[in-house]
Image (cartoon, rainbow, N blue to C red; front, side, top):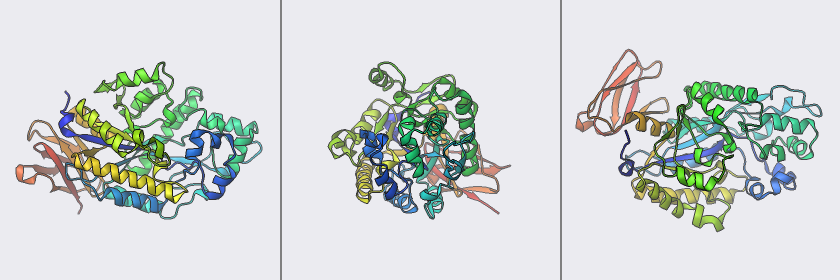
Length: 423
């Protein structure tokens, strides 16, 4: 049963690499590593100044999103695909690097040179405001076996980067966390750990997984389904297939797209504006807005993908340029009546015609496009004693009841903010 996605004009703002302690922790590392092989490639020159977000970066992005409203009256939501852990460099001692498995610090704890005061505070504020929605990007975004092997062999670029608390080297750039060349036991363990750490940090299971570097196989999809993750991001961009451009073109017209284990999204629309002015005709706001409209015309939601590097960088001018481009894009999408959703909402809307997204700890945004006033039920968080309809089409007969920790709602088509009540 397919929804009228042409009418709904849904847009997902997916963004990778949040929480990732790479490439450079500070300006000193950026300068010291500039001559290393991985930093001299075209991608390396662009990403070399990429760094962990600060509290100020998160606040600036949240404030920007709150300037806008979608066609449903709610602000854009930023789906931040998040890395759960970082290498614990204090326990990665040369020359033997005699550790197994890789020692980790769990986010929001980070290695010393990556410290960002008040970061978790601002992340929590953005989530409470409903403009930030974490999803899973992996445990540590590293091909663990390949990296440890490079360090133990004494590969100079791996050792040099390690001195500056950076994992970026040729061995890391040539693989991925869930790459089939990594040991199966390591891949399975790391995914299980990532899901467990995500649940401990955010209080829920991830609804979507973006495998780092687009490198994974069918085993990962099966493991993700076993662990309760229904959506796999980036299927049209997955590496390792013959004729990738033709494959992507074919998948462009396959919607909805699902396997026996997973739900897949349409091809991503790349929005990578910062540091690439000559590519603006292809990756900038105007081109992305046209591509979004094209997705809607095909009867699909639009998946806009933008890496953290566009909005968080050691070069302040680079960061400002990225935010300016995002503002330009949001102006265009707001004008078109775009409705901003997450991967999980897309999955729920496609499979049952209604969705629920938590808005911090204060409530939930319910989208309903099913049979008018047919009852729906969903669990409330622990400690909630009641529910009230605060925003939405209350004048059209919407009803909300609460009993035994569960909400029952009878709604007409639309979007509704339900607020939790606590004794």
